[in-house]
Image (cartoon, rainbow, N blue to C red; front, side, top):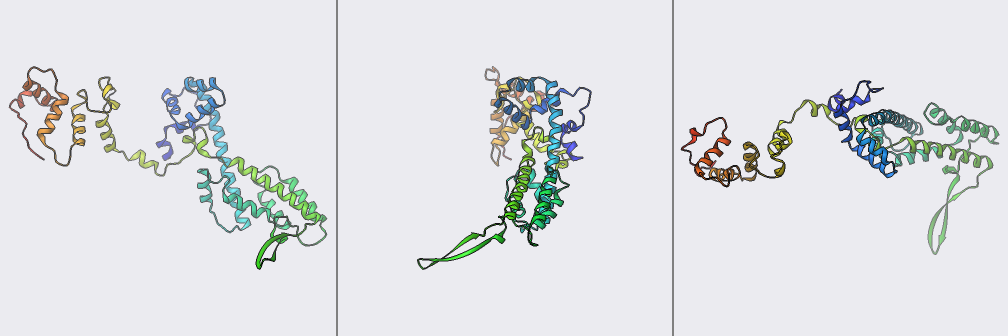
Amino acid sequence: MSHYFANPLSVLLQDPLPSEPIQAELYESVRNLNSFRQLVDEELSRGNVESARLLLEDDQFLRDRIGRDIKRGKEALRSLVDAIDLLSSMRSHLGTKTSETWSRLYIKAMSGELRGSPVISDTLLAVRKLPSDAMADFLNLIRESKLPDMSPVASDLQRLESEKETVDPLRSEHDTHHQSLRTTVVAHKVELSKHKASLTKHDLSYSALVDRIDKTLRDYFQGVLIHPPDLFLHEVLVYDLKSPHREVFTPKPRYALERALSSPRDYLGCSCCKGAQHGLSGTHPAISVLYQLYLESGAIINISDLWSAFYTIIGSEDAEDEDAEQQRALYVLYPQSSPEDYADYTPKGALF
């Protein structure tokens, strides 16, 4: 549930989208996502200028695209999880040397590190080395997966098993059974070299069948092991916050107050501070001016210097009566009091 509290855009996960009109602010939020910018860049790179323009300007066009891509994204992520299940089952069945738990495979897949990784290469290498009797059990294991139909491969394997002339299982050219080491002495140096034994006709046929299985598995993993951040609206589809409830239910008043004091225009939306967004200005609220002066000061603050700096910013340059202008600046500093209360105020060089 934390995902739905932390991410208002999760309302787009409804299938189908609600029939009533969606708030315009929701479309603006979608247009501010990084995945939306990537989508527009892709459309422009393909030459689809009109499509990119409609995505930016037409809410109904964007709504249709959202519904279509959310459905595709869900299907892609389901296929990704199915591939992780298959890979985990394969590695458990093959007894690979390095153990990878399902959770570690999932983390690698969601970060885009599993596609083309040594985990896939080692698993497929173990498949290519399987003898024919173990390959039959392996095909039974993956029969229930989302792979393309493997029935023709299983039928060809049964045919090769029935045609072989020995009781020994068939072995592919990748099997170490067909490899041997040769020792030669050249110039008083011993050299080792690998030598492959000649394959029988049935072993060659079995090798071709193993290559077909390897290509099918390789193409499958290459197709479904996507990089989730490349999906449009992956911010909605993927739950990637470690502690989203902390962001939602634990406010950060200190950060909000500091930002409000540093950039009051972001909260007030006034036009008078437009020209002084990144500096001190007399149009800023007095508390913002004092906060900025406080940040610029050292560990010890001289009250007289603080007052002079504050008066320089708040006071008017063309004021005729300096005392009256100081009283006005003091009234700005303490709006709850009247200027008469501080008529005799004279800044001292006190320290604190």
